Length: 222
Length: 234
Image (cartoon, rainbow over all chains, first blue to last red; front, side, top):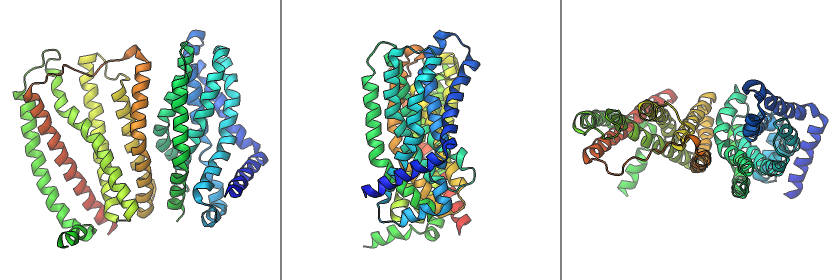
């Protein structure tokens, strides 16, 4: 079971490594979206500092969602997914491994590059830690919830737009907690409560989402 | 024993179809009568509010619509879950039939809330916790309907919708509490919805009559819609 999960994670990472432009596009999207906001709302440092946590989180949310459509599409197209459904490893474990690989490819780079955006927005350096921890806890939840939507919309017409309609309302709690924790730290208060809530969301999502993803994959491929 | 047989008897679309027609007709009549009574009480009998004047009268539509919008989502998720668990076609059809009515009431609650907010708060929209979570509820309804509309195979549409509805119903309380918390963090534009606790009994009567009317309307509309779905799939 663990061997199967490890095999899937290494395989997906290897596939991403062979096509680095796919990973790069989502990351570039994150940077571009975050860079557009000052052009739209003006470049006063006080204003930018105030909106920075929200902008970074919304950009992370959109970027994570953008790469979701690819999560199962290629495996579905070449029949790998059906082999996974037929295989001996429990489908929930397979789904969890796929999500983990997706997060390593699309979520973790966001955490790494977020301080750069924070720099552009003149966010105090003392907040980088909170921002990174909130993204570390929050982006896996985005991948887990998003994978349910990706599995449900597998092979549908206009899947990408539909996926955003299904998934974005469910992202609201993560956005609120994530941006809220940085806001809290910026106001000089302890962000611990929000970070713990994010961690709680992560635990709940990690426990239940893989089985929902597995059920969704069965529905979509039968 | 005979009760058990009757119970499953109507689980089949063929036998449910005529029953739904009869029930829908009775509910249409009941809804019309109760709505007439409720609107009469609301507009002519209930006293003018001391603080809000006549504008408050929209609550006779707004509050029951908001109740129904939340309740119908649970009803929809319930039927969807039954359909997914027991593979009963009629339950899934019921879930699809309830969704548009739920979305309608969510929209009415938001719309009437905006019309009430303009004279009372001075703004059509404020980012109050209840308004925001109601808006997200509307998005959840629309997502459910869009997913079902995008899938051609009715069986897959039923089951995919059911899974989404279950995920949604688990998330609704989390969304509600996170939005409430977000709202208290951003204290700036907070407007409290809580009014004086004392409410004239005629106001309460009007509101309850309207709530019952909306209940019967929801049942009638869902049953009429489920009849169309049965015919479409027959």
